[in-house]
Image (cartoon, one colour):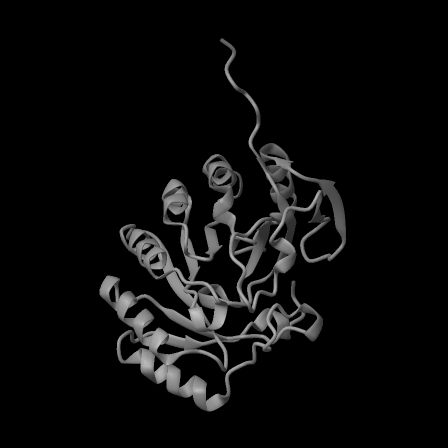
Length: 265
């Protein structure tokens, strides 16, 4: 019997170098690997182009150049390693960001890829995720250094994953070497009861987990998914909701999408 030697592949959107604009790693320089495909349809999504897999992906020619080559999908593991090696100039990057889309839809690929890219670059691995796929997370946890998990509020995202989010955060907490934080998108339609419920669930696992309230960046009219526009919260709402969550979890920060202010990808 011949062993299956097919090389793992991934469906990608892009590979590039930029400044992280959200969460705990804000302001740091990262190599971004943006994976295609997402199983969520959040009302505020600013990356709907990642929901499906395109026939091609783009790769930055050199870090920060914003000049891209076009390559076909799916991408073999060894080719992606070559692209990361090209991006990884000495002393430039703080970590590698796995983003999307939902990277955990590529968990079998990541299981093979992550130990190799860590060996190649020596860079920490950071996962940006919807935080709703604990089984896939378990497959790659040993290869991660930090996780930024979204906690989807039904009143804002239209998605409901209370049980999955809780299990996901518990898995992260069970790995003491892993840095984890929770990001919550807030809008004018945010239900404060959902914020309190989220805070209580986080506090029950680990009250020291940092929480980032991220005011939604309104989408252009042509890109909106709902008949009612998703609007940014007003200043009074932000202050009130931060105070509400701090009753249960002490580390609650309000940070908008800074990369959009800086015209980063």
